[in-house]
Image 1: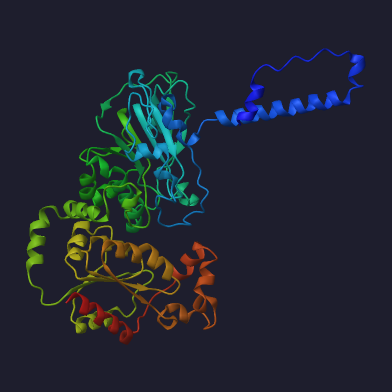
Image 2 (image 1 turned 90 degrees about the vertical axis):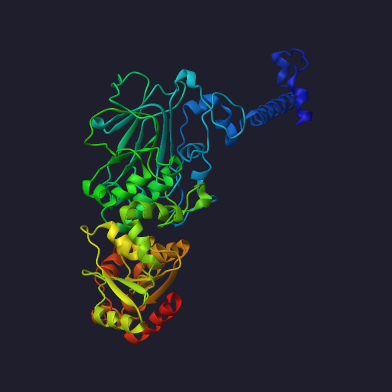
Length: 505
């Protein structure tokens, strides 16, 4: 561009020309037109050369950090990729995500690339949101933060005055792509306030960060309790080492009763019921929403120091408690037979020939235990039974989530009904293998499905489940989940049991 710099100085003077002569000098008109084009070109090039590099702009400007706002819209189709990684998720690289992950430190001042800064002496607050992930939205706040449950709001006082910080709306639940269920989840407002709102006085001060999430949505289904709630919660707050306050929207006492042992290992502080607790809780730092990595999994390559085995350790500590000594004593005893736990169902996907299956398991050499979890079943009892088992068997369904309670090296056998091959592998098979379990499938044939009694032998429901599933999840649910039971071929099933027995004995 050096040859263009000649024109940056003052142009040489041009002699005045009478109006009567201008139109008789076409060559001068051409020269003026050329001069105009050169001037425009120089202006464009100068603009391009002085344009800031936006990839580092926010990290190089301390004023921006004081009012950080990250609104990244996802262009992915919902669940197009079921397990995120660093290259597929902007969430791991955006400035706001760095704050959420604890990777960016708040400093008084810095010009280093990648460092976000603000001026603590001005007490300027931070509010940013990362909406890049297909499964979840997460917001971050730092400064003078106060809850206002009456208006369903969390207020950030004194945000950076020169900022574009604006009110944010968020439903802190990890099924963002599923509009129908998200519409049932309470929405919360994150409001920046420069003083116009007249802030309410703090009733409770917290010296540790707060994390806000919802136990609405599908909460109550054990798969969703872990996949959408407890695992994302652990991923999000694990780095705090228990020094964090949990603020729960749509708090349910039965949820706390069921998972109290786990929750108390995640946080050393009392849970705040956002709706019912009308006091003003004040925080210096807050995360609203939860991170999620995939189906029942933790991906440590996404900037999380804790892994799935760390979560298992937390489950053991939280659920065994006083039973731990007894559990260890039981594990030291020599078992005569390998222990096999069968999870049973009673509404859909019922194992119709359960008695024959039990007898076959016993004949193969297993000590058989039946488990039929319900809301009244103590989670510690389920954990104790499965953690001491050598194998677990069940038909595809939410109760399969309990494979999380099993020891690495034990066997997880999933009976897969017709039309559910993908779901069985995605939701339970792959996560079980990542946990270190020996995963075995028993995929039923058409003859082993109760649907063979309802449909003609050439009906797509029987011969082309893939085509049926392409009609949408509602059709899959209606046919293959809600209307199907299973009667396994005992001879074929026995061959699988022999392989399992050889592995665990």
